[in-house]
Length: 337
Image 1 (cartoon, one colour):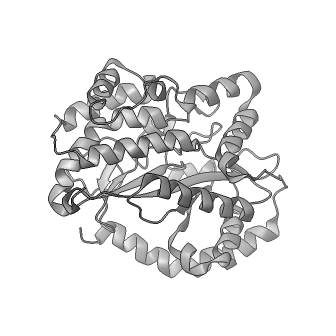
Image 2 (cartoon, one colour):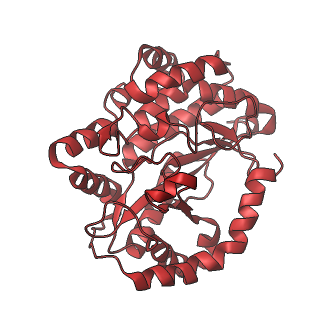
Image 3 (tube, rainbow, N blue to C red):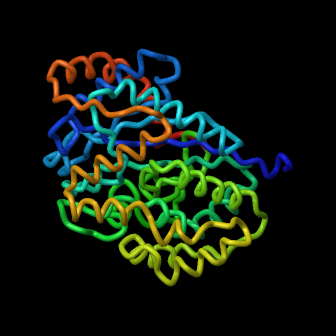
């Protein structure tokens, strides 16, 4: 591999954390981050984060997902080892909470209160536009494979409520640096940031998606990406999943990377939706937690919400990181690429 074709990958993983007998997160999530942060402040100043609902969505639930992120890697398996280690550390810090790695909580209908797996793809500046176009062309296939949030407000919404509604992502724009769309050029990092994916608790599925992204980023072939076609087709595949368009693009992907058809025919969205309909939302969340924890060899030890831990989380994590959050926010909106 030449330096010209060098590809780096990094992952930001967001999840919800719920206390016993609760279906929505509380500010106690900040205390789980506090415990994680103080184990390694230098690392987790930059590689952890908290999210909150925006505007009207705050009426449903103010607290949002929490985030852990990996370092930058050129090898997919090393990235996954990094992620699993961070999951272990977070699972220990979040003891007492249920980890729910879904795009949107099944009892809410809040486009701004979601969770995701953001994949950062680093390539040379001279290849960035080509790689962006090619990744965007194949995004419908990869996004369908990653979907896992089929319900909102207790009702079935299709493949992924989070992907289908415009909130923190949406149709692609002419301005590739605008933050709230499926793929962006990150102003802060200069990477191609794939924001479209629901969280991916299944490591084997995440591995295949990462390997496909890596292969797409390395190819010199230019695929016929059309932004208007993408935006029109996303209205369908975000709801119905494996549409004729997705099937066609999947076939075009095969010479670049042999991506199993099972990944688009059987997304986690189907399993969690089926469990929720048959056994209730709580059972679906327990299954999602089990899948997320599988490589970590940890188990949930659910405890009730504590007001004291809300205060310690605000003081011992959120307040301390305010200067960094302000800096990061500025770079994300005004940084140079």
